[in-house]
Image 1 (cartoon, rainbow, N blue to C red):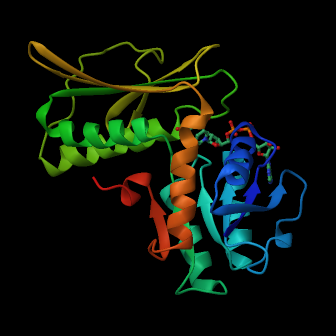
Image 2 (cartoon, rainbow, N blue to C red):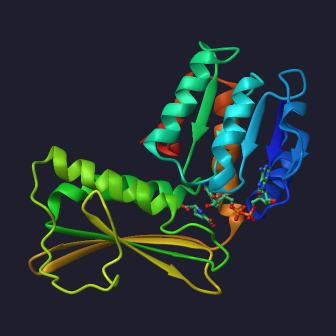
Length: 251
Ligand SMILES: NC(=O)c1ccc[n+]([C@@H]2O[C@H](COP(=O)([O-])OP(=O)(O)OC[C@H]3O[C@@H](n4cnc5c(N)ncnc54)[C@H](O)[C@@H]3O)[C@@H](O)[C@H]2O)c1
Ligand SMILES: O=C(O)C1=N[C@H](C(=O)O)CCC1
């Protein structure tokens, strides 16, 4: 049995993870902690893998504490920047198991979203224009979504590798309506009661359009991906920091 502790266990995602861990035949719940709890209760004696779903403002500190505790961590919380990832790598190097520590971070655990992201990166070099629209429930604290940032960066990277020019855009007045520009790609965030987690990637050429869309209607959609990551970390996942569930899929 894989012993799993959950941090952020009372949250929308964390409570689903507790249920998924309790229901899977190869995992068992160790500790379920939330704000105000002492994370140093989590040790290699009681926990094989920690799943962390909290809020972007606290996640880095939680991960640094858990690395200090010598436990492997699956992170679903958003808000990861290159600077934060560098701090995680440094903490691993200075931590109790620098050669064995595993930290896995995924902006999205839903297979639909991971595939949409993957297909978007493949399509990127074939289209002059690209924009990302993400649509979420109105209780989400961050915008744009971590998934949309990841998608925009992937599209930008693919365009750069293909030697493409910036996306065409003659906008002279904006007022914010063109969204946030991430590595040259416009990202638009919609917050609407009734939605859960959705993303559309729009690609355009003269006379044609490709739309790639992923819809997570329910948070249960994230749980197979979370359990896959837990099993990989308890098994043959690479050491160090890995970002993106695509690394654990046969793509
Ligand atoms: N990767 C994915 O597939 C995926 C899917 C959905 C949500 N998310 C992300 O997961 C995060 C959580 O989303 P949510 O909807 O569950 O939020 P939420 O607000 O429902 O839950 C967050 C939980 O974290 C707890 N918390 C706050 N500070 C803490 C601390 N210092 N230590 C421990 N727990 C603390 C809160 O009390 C709360 O219970 C967000 O960043 C969201 O974008 C990722
Ligand atoms: O509900 C959320 O919050 C979600 N956050 C992630 C993101 O920001 O990309 C994944 C989708 C759901």
